[in-house]
Picture 1: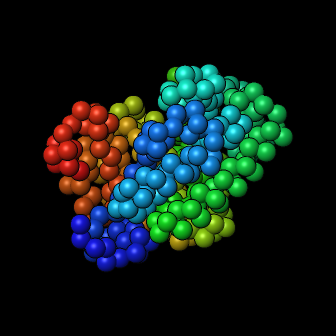
Picture 2: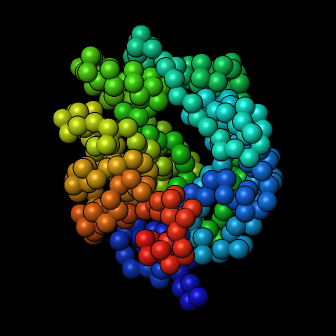
Length: 334
């Protein structure tokens, strides 16, 4: 293997800036594979922080080409997940078998009437109320979980840097407003809102957008890493048509990326599902000021054809290939 000529952080920054690099950044979201690699169960990996971090270290030692840590366990570990995780968690060794994959169950936590809470008290209060209801815990327990998550995030960040890795994103605080509502209301109920109360919903999406942008900027500055994770799934062309995308997804996304760029913050747009129909819209975003991260549902070759020279693309390989493909087939698709 050729010797690296760039430091991990230098390579990642150059990639985002669309500059030449010595090699492609390697930034897998390894999830519980690390535990399986180290020979521990998912129960141990998701409940024992020390064992989980030791497992992640083992993966890196075996594959030092892994130069950018894009997986952060701090929001998924059991002590945090069932207090302030992004939805109701079922964990291995508790609700599930010891070696099962953890699950996040979606249901209608917030009702349509709860939109009034957002308008009166802001998105932070709406979000805290959602977490209380989703996990069936007190406000004090939610805040305790958030404090623990921050402590673990700091430890995780420092471990990554000590290994010589870059940290792909400094904070996972962002989500498209469309998805923020979809996850709290549930997809079925939220899509009904989109059709039945479009004017009110549009107004609320802008309120959420302001709150998320403010959070991303403040956390990025506090951590000292100018890259933030922005999640998006349910606004893709796989789920909604162009008319609704242009009203309820794209305006907020465009303003968010432009505002973050003005504040020297780089959004890593972690967009699962099939965005192939929406790819040309991203040409209207600031060049070399964001990363588009796609999973195997989006046509990665079409994304490259349209967005080459405009933004860095972080691409996924189909899970099916990792399961059944030969090494030659796998690397042909990378």
